[in-house]
Length: 77
Image (tube, rainbow, N blue to C red):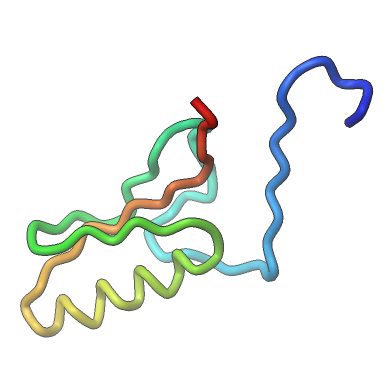
């Protein structure tokens, strides 16, 4: 990547985690809305997003609705 004249995006993960409700295609510089909810917002980055979705499902059983948003990239601007 040294010879590429522009920004380079590396995505590093510790595992091949499937995230319920996530298509697997990220929006560069954007947010991916995975779950809707009105009581709580969970922002997540990376493979831990699968745990965030599980937490939202657990809270839903307690009548607490959670929005889960994956922050796939972080813009330096």
